[in-house]
Image (cartoon, rainbow, N blue to C red; front, side, top):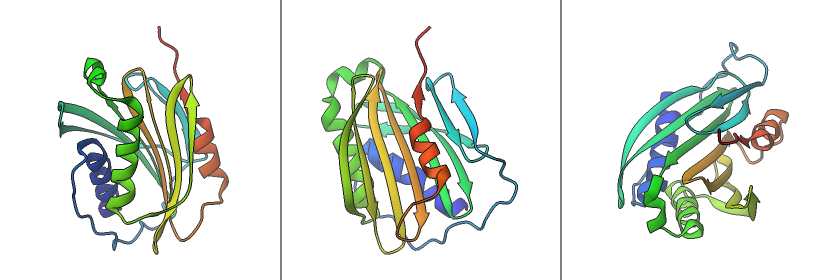
Length: 186
């Protein structure tokens, strides 16, 4: 499990740094964790979001060096059998004014796709509260991935599901992606 979580964390760093980091995709997925509970709502005040994970997510914070300075990246990861669910966010603050929103989202997508040699199956642009985003389904010979990226309120959000095999068709995956909500500003 630690190897897969490390790969995912590195992939997110790649997205933010737009660096060329070679990552091995040969690690096995973790064994089933029978301690997970039924789907549960999770919210994070700092990230200003709510989502339904298939269990309790593990939270991590990393400082990431980027072209526009050091940024804090927060990840929330939950493993359910052979499926890995993750939400990551990075606050850009006023530094976001230096970047093109669509370009940032597309570069993050490209970094993720190329770092584990995924082939894009389907890609759709979308809006969430008038904020640009992209949803991608992709696969390689080991993994099938759904990735949703968007920028809202100067925060880059990344929702990721990675499963071993060639498709995603379980209820928790749909619940996860469709349950994401931005919390209202107070």
